[in-house]
Image 1: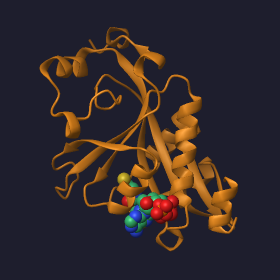
Image 2: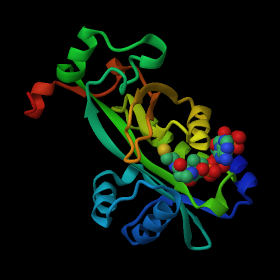
Image 3: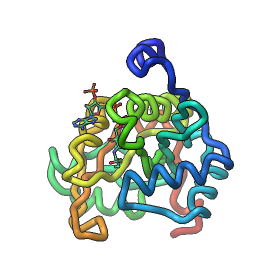
Length: 205
Ligand SMILES: CC(C)(COP(=O)(O)OP(=O)(O)OC[C@H]1O[C@@H](n2cnc3c(N)ncnc32)[C@H](O)[C@@H]1OP(=O)(O)O)[C@@H](O)C(=O)NCCC(=O)NCCS
């Protein structure tokens, strides 16, 4: 934790990379915090594949928060931070084609972040997100970080905006209960300075 954050949280919280033995506690935090829950094997595969983007917050040996991400390769101009549908309108036909067939760029998808209710508003969510952003910035290939968030989730939206994420798209009825999602995107570096690959290299086309 940064000194400022330690001062804010009383220096009691440790932010560190997640380990396999943390996963049951991470699942408890997830269950108590969000209606979007996942099975053990999902957490495990995320940790094993992209452990550098999986952090936990710990206090006196108890896991009180986590943030986990997946690294993806995408062509969608919104997800790579090149186009904002809410500010610039829907994708043009040409951009839609790019979305399907264009070069793919390396992006980080924040799948889930949560802090136990009794530990919120002490800067832990910020510290977890800061670690993810720092990691993506250190990874020379990553062009953006993106996430989905309920349109009604004001605390989370404020947290993301504080770190520079912008609402870039609405996905109607994204959640099981029918609520819409904002896609929020933080550009890490221009696509030409990141890592990309031809979609034809992947066997998709
Ligand atoms: C979103 C969440 C992770 C934030 O964690 P946190 O530890 O409380 O966050 P922080 O204390 O670092 O707060 C960071 C910023 O978020 C915003 N924020 C946090 N709680 C807020 C609230 N209740 N109302 C409005 N803004 C809030 C503020 O902008 C705050 O910055 P500030 O303290 O400088 O004003 C936490 O509320 C949570 O676990 N929510 C349930 C799970 C969830 O919704 N996850 C996101 C799914 S997309």
